[in-house]
Length: 449
Image (cartoon, rainbow, N blue to C red):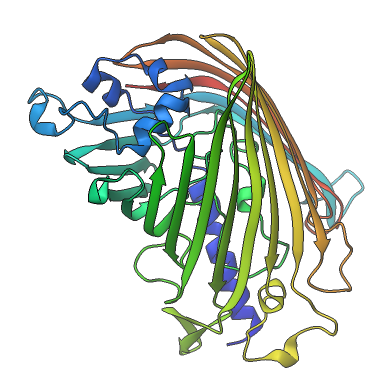
Protein backbone atom coordinates (compact mmCIF):
# COMPACT_ATOMS: atom_id res chain seq x y z
CA UNK A 1 0.00 0.00 0.00
CA UNK A 2 1.35 3.42 -0.89
CA UNK A 3 1.68 6.49 1.29
CA UNK A 4 -1.36 8.08 -0.35
CA UNK A 5 -3.64 5.23 0.72
CA UNK A 6 -2.33 5.30 4.29
CA UNK A 7 -2.90 9.06 4.45
CA UNK A 8 -6.47 8.64 3.15
CA UNK A 9 -7.17 6.09 5.89
CA UNK A 10 -5.68 8.44 8.46
CA UNK A 11 -7.80 11.33 7.18
CA UNK A 12 -10.91 9.17 7.41
CA UNK A 13 -10.14 8.28 11.03
CA UNK A 14 -9.48 11.97 11.83
CA UNK A 15 -12.80 12.92 10.23
CA UNK A 16 -14.61 10.34 12.36
CA UNK A 17 -12.90 11.70 15.45
CA UNK A 18 -13.96 15.26 14.59
CA UNK A 19 -17.53 14.09 14.04
CA UNK A 20 -17.65 12.40 17.42
CA UNK A 21 -15.96 15.38 19.08
CA UNK A 22 -18.86 17.61 17.99
CA UNK A 23 -21.25 15.47 20.03
CA UNK A 24 -21.28 16.88 23.55
CA UNK A 25 -21.54 14.06 26.12
CA UNK A 26 -22.33 14.04 29.80
CA UNK A 27 -22.87 11.74 32.74
CA UNK A 28 -25.41 13.81 34.64
CA UNK A 29 -28.28 11.41 35.28
CA UNK A 30 -31.27 12.87 37.16
CA UNK A 31 -32.72 9.35 37.03
CA UNK A 32 -30.39 8.47 39.94
CA UNK A 33 -31.67 11.44 41.93
CA UNK A 34 -35.24 10.31 41.25
CA UNK A 35 -34.42 6.74 42.26
CA UNK A 36 -32.95 7.66 45.65
CA UNK A 37 -34.83 10.91 46.37
CA UNK A 38 -31.63 12.97 46.44
CA UNK A 39 -30.95 16.42 45.00
CA UNK A 40 -28.52 16.55 42.05
CA UNK A 41 -26.15 18.55 44.27
CA UNK A 42 -25.62 15.40 46.33
CA UNK A 43 -23.39 14.03 43.54
CA UNK A 44 -22.35 17.16 41.62
CA UNK A 45 -20.21 20.17 42.50
CA UNK A 46 -21.72 21.81 39.44
CA UNK A 47 -23.61 19.58 37.04
CA UNK A 48 -22.13 17.58 35.31
CA UNK A 49 -18.90 17.75 37.40
CA UNK A 50 -18.85 15.18 40.23
CA UNK A 51 -18.03 15.76 43.88
CA UNK A 52 -16.49 13.01 46.03
CA UNK A 53 -19.87 11.52 46.94
CA UNK A 54 -20.66 11.27 43.22
CA UNK A 55 -17.29 9.65 42.51
CA UNK A 56 -17.87 7.11 45.28
CA UNK A 57 -21.41 6.40 44.03
CA UNK A 58 -20.05 5.80 40.50
CA UNK A 59 -17.19 3.64 41.83
CA UNK A 60 -19.75 1.53 43.72
CA UNK A 61 -21.57 0.75 40.49
CA UNK A 62 -24.40 3.30 40.95
CA UNK A 63 -25.27 1.77 44.34
CA UNK A 64 -25.69 3.33 47.78
CA UNK A 65 -25.12 -0.08 49.37
CA UNK A 66 -28.20 0.05 51.58
CA UNK A 67 -29.57 -3.28 50.39
CA UNK A 68 -32.22 -1.86 48.06
CA UNK A 69 -30.23 -0.98 44.93
CA UNK A 70 -31.56 -3.76 42.68
CA UNK A 71 -34.40 -2.78 40.30
CA UNK A 72 -36.82 -5.21 41.96
CA UNK A 73 -37.04 -2.78 44.89
CA UNK A 74 -38.03 0.18 42.71
CA UNK A 75 -41.46 1.47 41.78
CA UNK A 76 -42.53 -0.38 38.59
CA UNK A 77 -43.03 3.01 36.92
CA UNK A 78 -39.39 3.99 37.45
CA UNK A 79 -37.22 3.91 34.34
CA UNK A 80 -33.48 4.76 34.61
CA UNK A 81 -33.21 7.14 31.67
CA UNK A 82 -32.32 10.80 31.17
CA UNK A 83 -32.11 13.18 28.21
CA UNK A 84 -29.83 16.16 27.68
CA UNK A 85 -30.16 18.90 25.03
CA UNK A 86 -28.66 22.33 24.36
CA UNK A 87 -30.56 24.83 22.17
CA UNK A 88 -28.10 27.64 21.51
CA UNK A 89 -26.84 30.58 19.49
CA UNK A 90 -23.18 30.36 18.51
CA UNK A 91 -20.58 32.09 16.38
CA UNK A 92 -17.58 30.31 14.80
CA UNK A 93 -14.59 32.09 13.24
CA UNK A 94 -11.46 30.73 11.50
CA UNK A 95 -8.59 32.62 9.83
CA UNK A 96 -6.68 32.73 7.64
CA UNK A 97 -8.32 30.52 5.04
CA UNK A 98 -7.70 30.34 1.27
CA UNK A 99 -10.55 32.10 -0.55
CA UNK A 100 -11.20 32.94 -4.16
CA UNK A 101 -10.54 36.59 -4.92
CA UNK A 102 -13.71 38.63 -5.61
CA UNK A 103 -13.87 39.59 -9.32
CA UNK A 104 -13.85 43.33 -9.95
CA UNK A 105 -11.84 44.17 -6.84
CA UNK A 106 -8.52 44.01 -8.64
CA UNK A 107 -7.64 40.58 -7.24
CA UNK A 108 -7.33 37.17 -8.81
CA UNK A 109 -6.56 33.64 -7.79
CA UNK A 110 -6.47 32.69 -4.10
CA UNK A 111 -6.25 35.20 -1.27
CA UNK A 112 -6.11 34.93 2.51
CA UNK A 113 -9.33 35.62 4.34
CA UNK A 114 -11.43 34.69 7.31
CA UNK A 115 -14.58 32.59 7.60
CA UNK A 116 -17.24 33.52 10.15
CA UNK A 117 -20.56 31.77 10.72
CA UNK A 118 -23.26 32.41 13.30
CA UNK A 119 -26.84 31.51 14.02
CA UNK A 120 -29.30 29.56 16.11
CA UNK A 121 -28.61 25.84 16.45
CA UNK A 122 -29.26 22.74 18.52
CA UNK A 123 -27.06 20.02 19.92
CA UNK A 124 -27.61 16.31 19.55
CA UNK A 125 -29.99 14.63 21.97
CA UNK A 126 -27.85 12.89 24.58
CA UNK A 127 -29.66 9.85 26.00
CA UNK A 128 -28.36 8.33 29.21
CA UNK A 129 -29.54 4.94 30.41
CA UNK A 130 -27.83 3.58 33.52
CA UNK A 131 -28.48 1.70 36.71
CA UNK A 132 -28.36 -1.75 38.25
CA UNK A 133 -29.52 -5.04 36.79
CA UNK A 134 -29.06 -6.80 40.10
CA UNK A 135 -27.01 -6.33 43.22
CA UNK A 136 -23.41 -5.57 42.16
CA UNK A 137 -24.28 -5.72 38.44
CA UNK A 138 -24.55 -2.28 36.81
CA UNK A 139 -24.82 -0.99 33.25
CA UNK A 140 -24.46 2.20 31.24
CA UNK A 141 -25.57 3.15 27.71
CA UNK A 142 -25.18 6.50 25.97
CA UNK A 143 -26.66 6.88 22.48
CA UNK A 144 -26.68 10.25 20.70
CA UNK A 145 -29.47 11.28 18.33
CA UNK A 146 -28.66 13.90 15.69
CA UNK A 147 -29.43 14.84 12.11
CA UNK A 148 -26.58 12.54 11.08
CA UNK A 149 -28.13 9.49 12.71
CA UNK A 150 -27.64 7.60 15.97
CA UNK A 151 -24.19 7.18 17.51
CA UNK A 152 -23.22 4.96 20.44
CA UNK A 153 -21.02 7.01 22.73
CA UNK A 154 -20.66 4.36 25.42
CA UNK A 155 -22.18 1.05 26.39
CA UNK A 156 -20.88 -1.32 29.05
CA UNK A 157 -21.72 -3.72 31.86
CA UNK A 158 -19.87 -3.85 35.16
CA UNK A 159 -19.57 -6.50 37.87
CA UNK A 160 -18.89 -4.94 41.26
CA UNK A 161 -17.31 -6.14 44.49
CA UNK A 162 -16.04 -9.44 43.14
CA UNK A 163 -15.00 -11.86 45.90
CA UNK A 164 -16.62 -9.41 48.29
CA UNK A 165 -13.93 -6.78 47.68
CA UNK A 166 -14.41 -3.20 46.48
CA UNK A 167 -10.89 -3.48 45.01
CA UNK A 168 -12.12 -5.90 42.32
CA UNK A 169 -14.64 -4.46 39.84
CA UNK A 170 -14.68 -5.48 36.17
CA UNK A 171 -16.20 -3.50 33.32
CA UNK A 172 -16.59 -4.63 29.69
CA UNK A 173 -17.80 -2.73 26.65
CA UNK A 174 -17.19 0.79 25.36
CA UNK A 175 -16.30 3.26 28.10
CA UNK A 176 -14.46 6.44 29.00
CA UNK A 177 -10.96 5.83 30.28
CA UNK A 178 -10.66 6.37 34.04
CA UNK A 179 -9.34 9.94 34.09
CA UNK A 180 -10.75 11.96 37.02
CA UNK A 181 -10.37 15.16 34.94
CA UNK A 182 -13.10 13.87 32.69
CA UNK A 183 -13.73 15.20 29.21
CA UNK A 184 -17.15 13.57 29.41
CA UNK A 185 -17.96 15.82 32.36
CA UNK A 186 -16.48 19.04 31.01
CA UNK A 187 -18.34 22.20 32.01
CA UNK A 188 -17.63 23.78 28.60
CA UNK A 189 -19.63 23.09 25.46
CA UNK A 190 -18.40 25.34 22.62
CA UNK A 191 -16.86 23.93 19.45
CA UNK A 192 -13.36 25.29 20.17
CA UNK A 193 -13.01 24.91 23.94
CA UNK A 194 -15.47 22.11 24.62
CA UNK A 195 -12.77 19.42 24.47
CA UNK A 196 -9.25 19.12 25.85
CA UNK A 197 -6.70 19.42 23.03
CA UNK A 198 -4.05 17.52 24.99
CA UNK A 199 -6.40 14.55 25.22
CA UNK A 200 -6.89 14.45 21.44
CA UNK A 201 -3.53 15.65 20.07
CA UNK A 202 -1.57 14.08 17.22
CA UNK A 203 1.29 15.75 15.34
CA UNK A 204 0.74 17.16 11.86
CA UNK A 205 0.80 14.40 9.17
CA UNK A 206 0.82 11.66 11.85
CA UNK A 207 -1.08 8.50 10.80
CA UNK A 208 -1.71 7.04 14.27
CA UNK A 209 -5.31 5.78 14.38
CA UNK A 210 -5.46 6.44 18.14
CA UNK A 211 -7.47 9.62 18.59
CA UNK A 212 -6.68 10.33 22.22
CA UNK A 213 -7.22 9.39 25.85
CA UNK A 214 -10.42 11.45 25.91
CA UNK A 215 -12.16 9.07 23.49
CA UNK A 216 -14.30 6.19 24.73
CA UNK A 217 -12.53 2.88 24.07
CA UNK A 218 -13.62 -0.73 23.56
CA UNK A 219 -12.13 -2.92 26.23
CA UNK A 220 -12.11 -4.55 29.64
CA UNK A 221 -11.28 -2.60 32.79
CA UNK A 222 -10.26 -3.77 36.26
CA UNK A 223 -10.90 -1.06 38.83
CA UNK A 224 -10.70 -0.79 42.61
CA UNK A 225 -11.12 1.84 45.30
CA UNK A 226 -11.09 2.46 49.03
CA UNK A 227 -14.35 2.87 50.95
CA UNK A 228 -14.40 6.65 50.43
CA UNK A 229 -12.72 6.48 46.97
CA UNK A 230 -9.77 8.56 48.16
CA UNK A 231 -7.50 5.82 46.81
CA UNK A 232 -8.38 4.49 43.36
CA UNK A 233 -6.74 2.47 40.60
CA UNK A 234 -7.76 1.20 37.19
CA UNK A 235 -6.14 -1.02 34.57
CA UNK A 236 -7.77 -1.40 31.16
CA UNK A 237 -6.99 -3.47 28.09
CA UNK A 238 -8.50 -1.91 24.97
CA UNK A 239 -8.76 -2.84 21.31
CA UNK A 240 -6.51 -0.80 19.00
CA UNK A 241 -9.48 0.76 17.23
CA UNK A 242 -9.92 4.06 19.08
CA UNK A 243 -13.45 2.98 19.98
CA UNK A 244 -14.51 2.08 16.43
CA UNK A 245 -16.78 -0.99 16.38
CA UNK A 246 -16.97 -3.83 13.85
CA UNK A 247 -13.27 -4.83 14.01
CA UNK A 248 -12.44 -2.03 11.58
CA UNK A 249 -8.74 -1.53 12.32
CA UNK A 250 -6.48 -4.36 13.51
CA UNK A 251 -6.18 -7.11 16.12
CA UNK A 252 -3.71 -5.67 18.62
CA UNK A 253 -4.45 -4.40 22.13
CA UNK A 254 -3.47 -1.38 24.18
CA UNK A 255 -3.09 -0.87 27.93
CA UNK A 256 -4.19 2.08 30.08
CA UNK A 257 -3.40 2.49 33.76
CA UNK A 258 -4.35 5.15 36.28
CA UNK A 259 -3.73 5.69 40.00
CA UNK A 260 -5.37 8.43 42.09
CA UNK A 261 -4.79 9.41 45.69
CA UNK A 262 -6.95 11.83 47.66
CA UNK A 263 -5.90 13.53 50.89
CA UNK A 264 -7.25 16.16 53.28
CA UNK A 265 -5.57 19.49 53.89
CA UNK A 266 -6.48 21.48 57.02
CA UNK A 267 -9.13 24.16 56.27
CA UNK A 268 -9.05 23.30 52.55
CA UNK A 269 -10.58 19.84 52.42
CA UNK A 270 -10.09 17.05 49.91
CA UNK A 271 -7.35 17.28 47.26
CA UNK A 272 -6.52 14.69 44.59
CA UNK A 273 -3.39 13.79 42.63
CA UNK A 274 -2.86 11.05 40.07
CA UNK A 275 -0.64 9.53 37.41
CA UNK A 276 -1.65 7.70 34.25
CA UNK A 277 -0.18 6.01 31.19
CA UNK A 278 -1.41 4.65 27.87
CA UNK A 279 0.75 2.27 25.82
CA UNK A 280 -0.43 0.98 22.47
CA UNK A 281 0.19 0.01 18.86
CA UNK A 282 -1.22 1.39 15.64
CA UNK A 283 -1.14 -0.10 12.11
CA UNK A 284 0.89 1.60 9.40
CA UNK A 285 -0.73 -0.17 6.43
CA UNK A 286 -3.59 -2.53 5.53
CA UNK A 287 -4.06 -5.51 3.28
CA UNK A 288 -5.80 -4.47 0.08
CA UNK A 289 -8.04 -5.79 -2.65
CA UNK A 290 -8.11 -3.90 -5.92
CA UNK A 291 -5.97 -1.26 -4.27
CA UNK A 292 -8.56 -0.58 -1.53
CA UNK A 293 -7.77 -1.31 2.15
CA UNK A 294 -9.62 -4.20 3.82
CA UNK A 295 -11.16 -3.20 7.14
CA UNK A 296 -9.68 -4.99 10.16
CA UNK A 297 -6.45 -6.05 8.43
CA UNK A 298 -4.19 -3.33 9.78
CA UNK A 299 -0.62 -4.53 10.14
CA UNK A 300 2.90 -3.20 10.36
CA UNK A 301 2.00 -2.13 13.91
CA UNK A 302 4.21 0.42 15.61
CA UNK A 303 4.13 1.70 19.17
CA UNK A 304 3.05 4.94 20.82
CA UNK A 305 2.47 6.11 24.37
CA UNK A 306 0.91 8.89 26.44
CA UNK A 307 1.83 9.47 30.09
CA UNK A 308 1.48 12.16 32.68
CA UNK A 309 0.07 13.43 35.95
CA UNK A 310 -2.80 15.57 37.19
CA UNK A 311 -4.17 17.24 40.30
CA UNK A 312 -7.53 18.47 41.58
CA UNK A 313 -7.04 21.30 44.08
CA UNK A 314 -9.69 22.97 46.27
CA UNK A 315 -9.14 26.41 47.79
CA UNK A 316 -12.42 27.54 49.29
CA UNK A 317 -14.73 28.69 46.51
CA UNK A 318 -12.02 28.11 43.91
CA UNK A 319 -11.08 24.70 42.52
CA UNK A 320 -8.20 24.18 40.11
CA UNK A 321 -7.59 21.22 37.79
CA UNK A 322 -4.03 20.79 36.53
CA UNK A 323 -2.92 18.31 33.90
CA UNK A 324 0.38 17.36 32.21
CA UNK A 325 1.00 14.96 29.33
CA UNK A 326 4.04 13.67 27.45
CA UNK A 327 3.42 11.82 24.21
CA UNK A 328 5.48 10.02 21.59
CA UNK A 329 4.71 8.13 18.37
CA UNK A 330 6.91 5.73 16.43
CA UNK A 331 8.84 7.14 13.47
CA UNK A 332 6.64 5.29 10.93
CA UNK A 333 3.47 6.71 12.48
CA UNK A 334 4.91 10.19 12.68
CA UNK A 335 5.88 10.15 9.00
CA UNK A 336 2.74 8.33 7.73
CA UNK A 337 4.98 5.67 6.22
CA UNK A 338 4.18 1.93 5.89
CA UNK A 339 6.51 -0.08 8.11
CA UNK A 340 7.26 -2.45 5.20
CA UNK A 341 8.70 0.41 3.14
CA UNK A 342 11.53 1.87 5.26
CA UNK A 343 13.15 3.36 2.19
CA UNK A 344 10.32 5.91 2.09
CA UNK A 345 11.30 7.38 5.45
CA UNK A 346 12.93 10.81 5.07
CA UNK A 347 16.63 10.98 5.91
CA UNK A 348 17.02 11.66 9.62
CA UNK A 349 13.38 10.84 10.43
CA UNK A 350 12.54 10.18 14.10
CA UNK A 351 9.48 9.51 16.23
CA UNK A 352 7.73 12.79 17.12
CA UNK A 353 7.31 13.72 20.79
CA UNK A 354 5.62 16.56 22.63
CA UNK A 355 4.64 17.97 26.03
CA UNK A 356 1.46 19.73 27.00
CA UNK A 357 -0.95 20.54 29.74
CA UNK A 358 -3.72 22.76 30.99
CA UNK A 359 -4.97 24.54 34.07
CA UNK A 360 -8.71 24.99 34.55
CA UNK A 361 -10.15 27.11 37.36
CA UNK A 362 -13.74 27.24 38.63
CA UNK A 363 -15.07 29.88 40.98
CA UNK A 364 -18.30 28.85 42.68
CA UNK A 365 -19.87 32.20 43.52
CA UNK A 366 -22.86 30.38 44.95
CA UNK A 367 -24.50 26.99 44.30
CA UNK A 368 -26.30 28.45 41.27
CA UNK A 369 -23.42 30.30 39.57
CA UNK A 370 -20.00 28.99 38.57
CA UNK A 371 -17.36 30.93 36.62
CA UNK A 372 -14.99 28.98 34.36
CA UNK A 373 -11.57 29.70 32.86
CA UNK A 374 -8.98 27.46 31.21
CA UNK A 375 -5.59 27.87 29.56
CA UNK A 376 -4.16 25.00 27.54
CA UNK A 377 -0.73 24.71 25.97
CA UNK A 378 1.05 22.16 23.80
CA UNK A 379 4.62 22.23 22.49
CA UNK A 380 6.40 19.89 20.11
CA UNK A 381 9.71 18.77 21.61
CA UNK A 382 10.76 16.77 18.52
CA UNK A 383 9.33 16.80 15.01
CA UNK A 384 9.15 13.60 12.95
CA UNK A 385 11.19 15.11 10.12
CA UNK A 386 14.30 17.24 10.76
CA UNK A 387 13.26 19.50 7.86
CA UNK A 388 10.09 20.57 9.69
CA UNK A 389 10.11 23.78 11.73
CA UNK A 390 10.09 23.05 15.46
CA UNK A 391 6.98 25.12 16.20
CA UNK A 392 4.69 23.38 13.68
CA UNK A 393 1.59 22.21 15.56
CA UNK A 394 2.24 24.11 18.79
CA UNK A 395 -0.98 25.46 20.24
CA UNK A 396 -2.37 27.81 22.86
CA UNK A 397 -6.04 27.87 23.83
CA UNK A 398 -8.06 30.08 26.19
CA UNK A 399 -11.61 29.55 27.41
CA UNK A 400 -13.80 31.68 29.69
CA UNK A 401 -17.46 31.35 30.57
CA UNK A 402 -20.08 30.72 33.18
CA UNK A 403 -22.97 28.41 34.00
CA UNK A 404 -25.99 29.74 35.90
CA UNK A 405 -28.50 27.23 37.24
CA UNK A 406 -31.97 28.77 37.75
CA UNK A 407 -33.08 25.44 39.24
CA UNK A 408 -31.81 21.93 39.78
CA UNK A 409 -34.10 19.24 41.15
CA UNK A 410 -34.29 15.46 41.26
CA UNK A 411 -36.52 15.67 38.16
CA UNK A 412 -34.71 18.11 35.90
CA UNK A 413 -31.98 20.71 35.65
CA UNK A 414 -31.37 23.85 33.62
CA UNK A 415 -28.20 25.86 33.04
CA UNK A 416 -27.88 29.19 31.20
CA UNK A 417 -24.47 29.01 29.51
CA UNK A 418 -22.16 31.57 27.92
CA UNK A 419 -18.60 30.75 26.75
CA UNK A 420 -15.85 32.15 24.59
CA UNK A 421 -12.80 30.21 23.38
CA UNK A 422 -9.81 31.15 21.24
CA UNK A 423 -7.25 28.74 19.75
CA UNK A 424 -3.94 29.56 18.07
CA UNK A 425 -2.16 26.72 16.23
CA UNK A 426 1.30 27.48 14.87
CA UNK A 427 1.79 27.16 11.08
CA UNK A 428 -1.51 25.30 10.70
CA UNK A 429 -3.24 27.66 8.27
CA UNK A 430 -3.80 25.86 4.94
CA UNK A 431 -1.67 27.07 2.00
CA UNK A 432 -0.17 30.03 3.85
CA UNK A 433 1.79 28.18 6.53
CA UNK A 434 0.99 30.85 9.13
CA UNK A 435 -0.65 30.57 12.53
CA UNK A 436 -4.31 29.57 12.43
CA UNK A 437 -6.77 31.34 14.71
CA UNK A 438 -10.11 29.83 15.70
CA UNK A 439 -12.69 31.28 18.03
CA UNK A 440 -16.07 30.16 19.27
CA UNK A 441 -18.77 31.90 21.25
CA UNK A 442 -21.88 30.13 22.48
CA UNK A 443 -24.85 31.07 24.60
CA UNK A 444 -27.82 28.89 25.25
CA UNK A 445 -29.67 26.56 27.58
CA UNK A 446 -28.16 23.26 28.70
CA UNK A 447 -30.87 21.12 30.29
CA UNK A 448 -31.63 17.56 31.21
CA UNK A 449 -34.61 15.71 32.63
